[in-house]
Length: 127
Image (cartoon, rainbow, N blue to C red; front, side):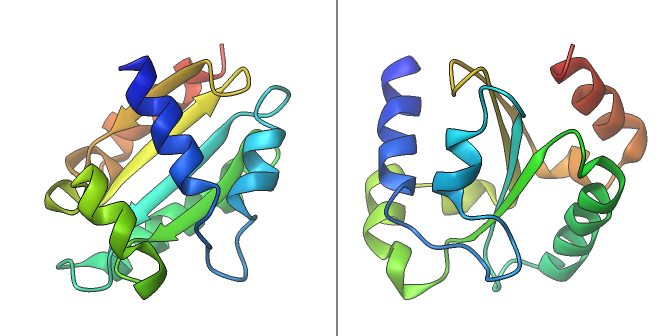
């Protein structure tokens, strides 16, 4: 698992995010002092806008606690990444990084839109 996360992070260093979100490289570099939440999504996923809006709401509420990054893996820049890591069947989801990437967690899509599931996970991750 650690090897996968290392390769995953290296792969993400070459990807771009939406212009209004913090760049992955910058957020990951700061994850030792401020944890990072990364939404991985694709435009073609049903209800993708609902997940993006929920993530943006989290950013409004927890912007002082976490760095936020959005990654659209449907973008042409990410095709090699998708083929290598086979991410898209599980979209969308959130990856959480802390302590310079040494601690990470995965939040599945069924939890992202459910505050009773998501908020306890977020709060426990920063402890």
